[in-house]
Image (cartoon, rainbow, N blue to C red; front, top):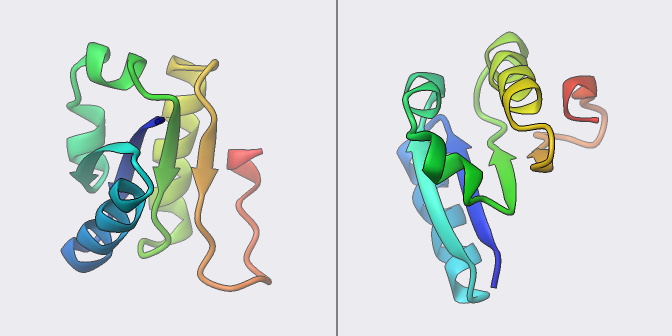
Length: 93
């Protein structure tokens, strides 16, 4: 079982993604948007095995939170979901 932290930008995808991950026995902590992500307690983030960033926000919004997580928590993998296969999110690599 992995501890997954997800940042979503709309409630519908947040709930759907959390249910899907929980059905696979993962523990999921969800936040809605960058402001909630930036306000998370350090212990909550440090407990995450991976961080999933939703696809529903403009690239600059998503890139900002990805960069912040990668700089602040370099040992936690960050996965950026893509809206379509042609999308590129170089900040998550």
